[in-house]
Length: 252
Image 1 (cartoon, rainbow, N blue to C red):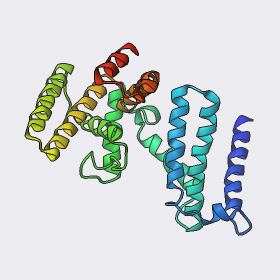
Image 2: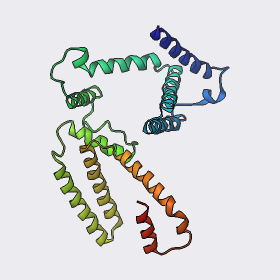
Image 3: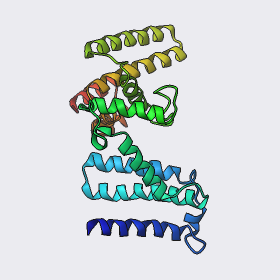
Image 4: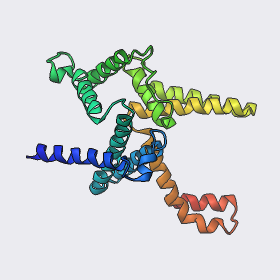
């Protein structure tokens, strides 16, 4: 019965979007394009991430619905252009999941560890999309920290990775020394380049320990905001740097 209800609700959702986009539907929905609703897709994704980080089940449910709306919306626009519809989207997803999980659906041996599965997934993806490099599929518009993490993950899937944290920490120290040298040269372009290299290796350390660099930095942002608000009123009084640092130290 649940599957029947699910099918009914899903088909109703598709129908609602079709009505909204119809001649007698909503003028706002009707005028939208793939590009015009892109900001909403990004916004909904971030709202879902925030709900998950807060572990708010009701918000997660709501935001998943909002994200699903974006999938239905884009599919309806494509259907009107004669390109594809939501059924095509689902069929392609089903095919992809089955093909990339042969250890589950086809009795393939050897994929016994999670990293085996990830490696196989990446190789299949590269083959399907006819990419020259395994790095070609990493979106350029991803937030920089997440993109770096993804690049490192992709490279690791073909064996390019640090084998120990000691090697990464040694590299961090090397990159920090290069930042210091660039600062002494007073060359902004060089400083920027070396700071970028330092960021990259720090993200590699995060990846080694299974830490999401974006979440780690966001947690530090929250901590900074909390501590800053405790001393903010004193800053408006024009206190000296030493006093400011003393107050800051007391907020820990």
